[in-house]
Image (cartoon, rainbow, N blue to C red; front, side):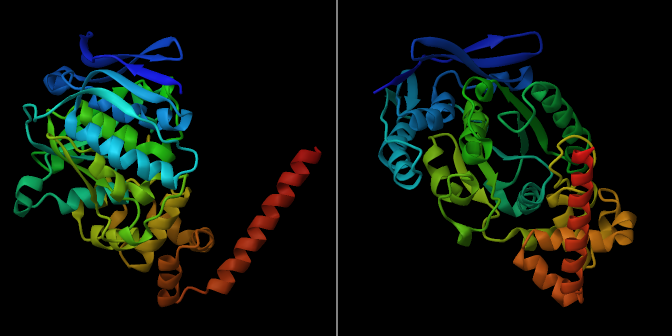
Length: 379
């Protein structure tokens, strides 16, 4: 069986950041993978354990059927969970993944930890809902303290560092300022460039690896669930459906992981956010990371249509072009029906939207577009 060798992590300082690095030998070819953070967070980068690199490389190793040999120290609890539970579960349910073994020097015990409570920040419905649910002092140890933004597969690779810095600055100047006390930390990495994997299929591994790179900072990490718990299954195209079963096996003696918001479908989350003033200013469900909500992608169409049927769209005039929506409601409704969301279709019916009419309009627009494209190709 092939092997991937992972060496002991180490820290390297650059002009404006600190990198957590590790050498990886894959079929005789050496690479250096790294995670980086601003210098103020460098003290939390965890060179004592190879946990972050192990989790990041696990999907590639399992897909290639290559054992992982870690020369560095790995948290004993994490190593046990991965070998005895995570690998068998994934191999049994995802045909493209193979059973492998992970060998490492295991070490027990927690490292020093600031005990921060973090969640990934995108501005989307799931992300915003996690923020809303964990601001209350009543949450105690689970009260949110940090927003995490990473570049691990979520940004364009040739601009990922630039976009990451822009998003961190935007969050600091925006929602973190309004919600006094929240800090924003950005983590850059080259893992996706060197070991590319389909992000949607294995996003949880890459996000968890960024958290574990900072496990001396995070005592709790809240992974915003994209799907409700009753949608649990193991499709090979999307990690989010089964993250509930996986996250606990990423835990170390320092850091606990939770699938936050999975008790509710996204439509119900949005209904709660409609009464959350920070969402009126910062909700960003758009697939376009940079800039304003485009108002055209499926996520924008869904959110605007749902808020409209809730009679709450006006509240979001700072993030959506509400007047354009009103002028082109038929277009929005037709696009929304195409999404085949049962919650939205039911809400349309309650609102009195003429679904058959909307479908006819959609068919006409689709036919007209196809004819236009056909004419263009003939020219």
